[in-house]
Image (tube, rainbow, N blue to C red; front, side, top):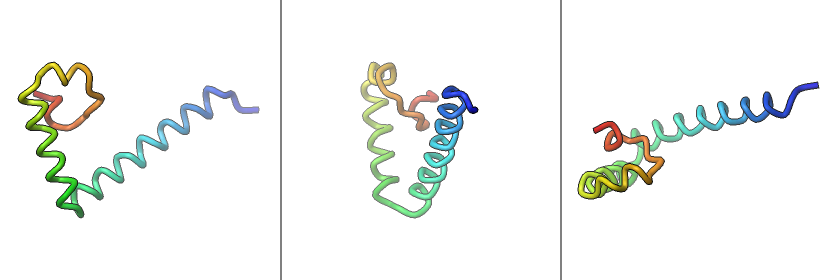
Length: 63
């Protein structure tokens, strides 16, 4: 019998893969998504304290 931890780990890695695929698709195919990403980066740059609070993984976090 599989352990609960193993099942949870598999689900979390699956979700991470799906999230990466969806993000890649949106960046490539949807200008509105790209525009929102740029706006988000601007807001994060103007308000550095938000970097601490945000789970955001976009380029603005890597500054």
